[in-house]
Amino acid sequence: MRQVVYVDVLIVLNTIVTFILLLCVRQFSGCATGPARLTVASIVGGVYSLVLLAPEMNFFFTLLTKAAMGASITYIAFPAKRLRVMLRCLSLFLGMSFFFAGVLYAVTLVGGDRVTYNNGFGYMELSLPAVVGLCVALYLVILFLRKKVFSPKPADAVYSIEITRGGGTFTGRALLDTGNRLGDVYGGKEVILLDDAAAKALTGLKVTSDVEAMANAGLPVRLLPVTALSASRLLPAFTADRAVVYNDARRREVDRPCVAVAPDGFGNEYQALIGGAFFEGGDR
Picture (cartoon, one colour):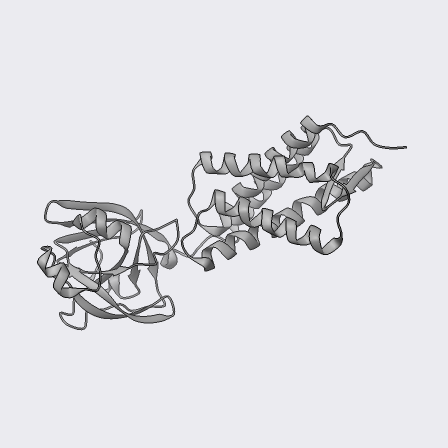
């Protein structure tokens, strides 16, 4: 007996499931993204589920197509600048997809329902409310585990940061990286690593390693040797007027901090990085 596949149910169901999967990825990846991107990516995933109705493809072509679509959905939802962040999001998305699919398939087997499987997609007899309810329940379990088991330690928390220089102010988020001890070898000041977009918002200029050009533009910079995130390099740096770094438990105000600009950024969740010695000057 052949199973009837309803195209509208297929698309709607996979759109909702993809949205829940992307919410799970956002929880574990730490990448900030808005509901609009999640929605667009989910719709793409829902439409792609129509591959179930296409002529059967060989295993390797199916695997390649599924990986390419997974990468596309992930990039739409989390447009990371760095390849490492993108690969982390993609790995989480594929892992969550296999986990959810396995649980749904197990429930279908227990219930004795039929499953239509083709080109890497399955269509189950479970009702739309039942599938959505099960996926929401799985998401709530994952959310609970994320907060209770995998939550970051306070020392590795993300802080709020406010930097001022002249008439410019930047407000964003900073990661305290306890594995790095950033320091200004010239003046002994605390160092804050800032991504290029945040530095431009603060100074009004695109900060580069061309010291002379920056000086002519009104921003004196120097090249600072910095070791952070397992890499060593010379980064353009300048002196800000003031920085305030804080969260619910700690607060530190620093006068005339050294700000080094990291052109590659740090991902979507935060725009700055501070070293393990940043709070050794005292919290206040």
